[in-house]
Length: 308
Image 1 (spheres, rainbow, N blue to C red):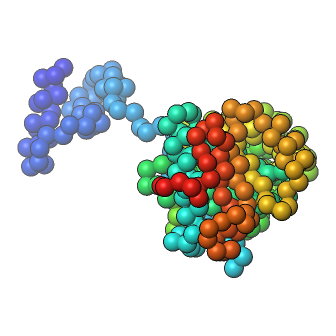
Image 2: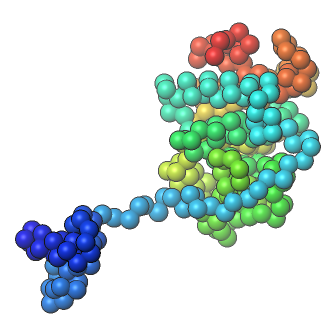
C-alpha cells in the first residue's frame, strides 16, 4: 500500500509543480480519483486520517459584544489599567496564580455576606485582570439569578440570553457565552430572571454545564448571591474549586461574617477581600476598591506588605 501512496504523491507533485503532499486527506482525495474501484481502501484511509478538532471549541467563535460602560461602572481593570485600584486586582490575581501551583484552581466563586458589599465589582475586575493573559482563557459567569448585575455593568442588553435559558434547555451553552470586544474576556450573563432560581438550579444541569465550560476555559470566575440570605450559593460552592468572600469595611456585620465563614469548608475558602478598606498607605481612591487579606495557612498576608 505504501507504493501506491508514493506513486500518487509523486504524480500529484509533478502535476502541481510543488512538493509531495503529506496530509492524509490529500492521499484520500487522490485515491478517490485514481482507484474508484477500491472503496474499502478509501474508507480505511479516511478512517485513519487525523480527526477534526473536538467540538469543545465553540466558544472560540462566540458572538462578540462591545461593552458600553457607564461612568460609575468602576471596571478599573478595563478603564484605568495603570491605576492603583487595578494594581490591587493584579496582586490578587497573582496570589491566585501562586495558589494554583499547589492545588487545583479553576472555578472560583466570588460571594459576600449581604447585598451592596461589592462582590460583583470584585468578580468583574478580577475576571478582567485574569483575561489579560494571552494564553489562559477566562470566563465571567453571572451566577446571581436573583439580582444579576454583569449584563448591566458591561452595558449589555438586559434581554441578552444567558445562564437561565441554558439551564431551562431553551438555548445551547455555545449560544449564551459571549466574547467581550476589545478584551480577552468571555462572559456568561444570567439571562432572564427566573421565577424560582433555586428550583432551576436544582434541575441537575449545572454540574454538566460547568464541566463543559471547564474543558475550554482556564479561569471561571463566578459571581454568586450572598452566602447568608439565600441557598443558591451552596450549589455553586459544591462545583467550585475555591471561594473568595467579599466584605465591606464599616458595612458588613461581624456576626453575619462569622456565620458566612462557618458555612465554608476551610479547604475551599481561598481568602477574604476587604472592600472600601480605609487602612491603606495610598489615597482614598485606591482604598475604595479593596484589598485581599488571605488566611495565613496559605502563606498570604495583606498585599500592602508584600513585594511583588
